[in-house]
Image (tube, rainbow, N blue to C red; front, top):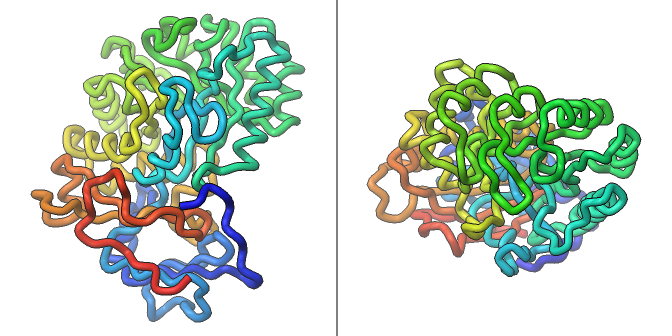
Length: 399
């Protein structure tokens, strides 16, 4: 697909998706919807239901799902972009487009930390955050929504700096602990300033991941009280189980599980959240690009791993990658219901999977095949070049 924005039609753009075999809502309380048709106008969902009950007339784009599964576009809660679709960490171009082919339609920056010569002075780090926020707002690589501009905080920052950042449109902090702020009292004070001005915070958890970062243990995490406990399963080095449990029980914040982390610790966290009856706190990220590269299928792999080894239904695991993150991150994508952004991924059982349905195949640990992605009602990719081939794929009938 072209990387530039598509031309808009003269009138309202109406998307109709019919013949959906399984509709995943992204909502834990009702993960499967009794519907086979979705209608969106100008990039926003207007109707979800049975084809006979919804208005399908005048579609400018008509997609026959061919009995495949429709899910909200997947959300990667933890990425480290720099500029456009290039990452200097691996000197790789096209990593965001590759993730789109893994069903990811939205990404959340945990800090643009891989920029060569990243400024650490207050003026410089604020300028970088505003630049990243502006550039990714104006340019979506392959259409993927990148929520970027996440400054890595330093000890010299004052309340006015957070007020300035918020006024400039910055809504995120980079991982606390990747810069000079590594102690609980300082971090808590700055998280309070950020929260006051509507900026959401994430804290690094576990051992150091890059030079300059350090160990962030349970005491610092709990005292900081950031909105999201970033990669609670380590990125890669996880805290001991006892500390992970203390974090889960000691706060009510988001519990982020990442692909580039400790898988056993991720499963321990999931079991703990399940025992507490708080699965709504679980969200997923890749923590890519990283030393282990980029993972175009990282979110799908987390969904399959958590379902197959963590003993949760596949439809529940998909909520970790969609609606849970949307609600926690205050996004308008990640849930399929009227009023939300028309961001979708079409999935089907991979060819020759042992599972007889997509949900069974994921529960057995297999990745589904991606047949198409849609962002804001516009088709952005078709049969994935990265996933196992889907048994069935949707077809654009018109548009």
